[in-house]
Image: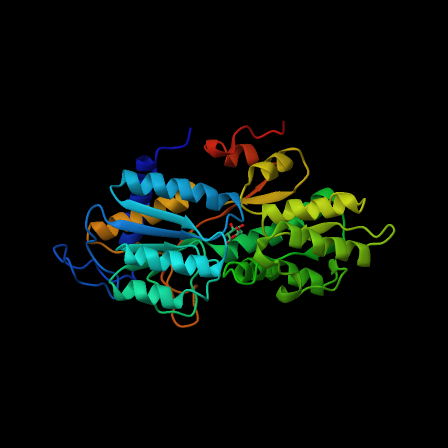
Length: 373
Ligand code: BGC
């Protein structure tokens, strides 16, 4: 069974208190008897017990979002709130309408995992006008003042870990270089896709420059390698085209940078159909099928971003607001959304390969048995 939510919330609250205590950038907690005041960031204080909390999630493009839905519903209810948790399955307009409806319903906090981080300004400004607090969850909200905090795993670091894993995997499984590789990035409307890519390229670009890595297709810019909507079929189609165009005959494809597990599995389908040897390939999200594949020695790596931890941190922040406190922050520099630096609480992602999978997932029963079958 999963860890209980109250337990996780207590854990997150304890860790945030510690961070609050040593964060010199933060404004001190204001008076605890205030019911209407705001913090420096405009956050409403002392949200009433039993408040409605809106959680607006994007499409179910990876398993972490599906798990988040359940964890938010259970955790917010357990903490005494009234959750409204919705997916914007059909796209940006649906997500905009859902946020409007949450505001109409009197939500005191809007938690938003944006489909398109640049398209929610109007809705979130309306939310702020009612005094609600806006928390960007996992994905940054861009080009608006109307966001109080960002709670996420460190996206740039995810990319750094992916780039590093690709190099290590190539040395381990292919032997000495030079190596032929291809790059895949996430969806350009998702604010996370660029930091993932930039983090990875901070490691890979020097190796492309010194000739250790060759991107045989020549497709190295974000625009060339992005995958619209994080859709598996789009990644597979692009890989099909790249393989037939650039890897005819016995040209080997040694490695693929993939930003997440869904796209990694799609790329591996294209590689198998082209009759090529399985390349070293990265991923992210610790999805069940990919974890099995890693344990079986196929997919090389994934990233563990424990959704339970991210949701617990978010709920603990909302509980802080109910207690007349502030949202805990541990980064005030990295996330410039175009009009402001959004104060962030960043959690630490972990790289997972066959070598450490059992250890990393030892306490996560959401994954089930680690071996295929
Ligand atoms: C999340 C990733 C996920 C992707 C597709 C991103 O914003 O951070 O974990 O793989 O969305 O759902």
